[in-house]
Length: 390
Image 1 (cartoon, rainbow, N blue to C red):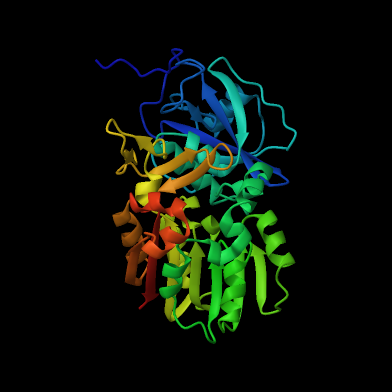
Image 2: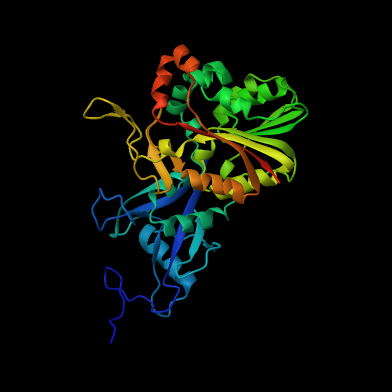
């Protein structure tokens, strides 16, 4: 006879599905929303592997209603008694979502040693395995205006560092990949253009100077858009705050969707490319740059020196797609790694025909003019893609 299943502390678990529930708790703050994640104490305070961080969750007892299970676990693990709503995720372990007051007090049980309130992107990066991220995504789809992307550009330290980069000071001419990307663009005259992740608005202004009829710049960062508006006086250019993770363009409203080094901040690539495609008219073009998967893959993305003194890019975890947390201009920057095949197949799957692909490498003339670019001949830093809708 099979022994009844129990929790770690000996409580019986239901033998029939669903076996438990997760409650994704969020609160609204000035910057958007934050999610509550708990650290399990079982493997010690320094453990960061699978199941280390999760939203409140627990097993269903025999005969217990699922809603009652979710409410009980939420109260036991956090001390919270707040309304819950089912999230659109079926299966053996469904999810709920619950909004907490901004000043709520969390009281942990013995099963957990600490908690954090995190931006959705950082919560998704910490909570593993994938089933936990799926539950968080399901809850976020129900939360109005829930940002999924990390808003790192509004971090004062990051923004200050980014503002000192050559591309921030000189604009498009300060971006080494711009000549290659510019050659992949269509004739701009008369086009309706959307810039996905427009930053300080450099491309928006260039597009109008090149003859575009109207340009819409979208970005998650209020700091970047403040700079863009301050340097733009053209009434045919508009700027709006938008999270590309929740991109929702009017159907067929644009002839060109352009993006420079923004797509690697978005977790759900399939949704992103599909949303861009819906916003384009028939024959519309998508031209974008993103960090190359050889650049995003490594655990520690930094040059190392080999035994013979040669410079080496330490490629690992290439086939292991998902979030990467790096320190670039500020600690804890979250990017999302996708293989080259995945990126191109997502573009194709969204109804595009790929016209051209470039793995950026500086020319001899560019290296001569800027010696620091020579190292970029060792591996591609950027992937550039041009495609059009059927």
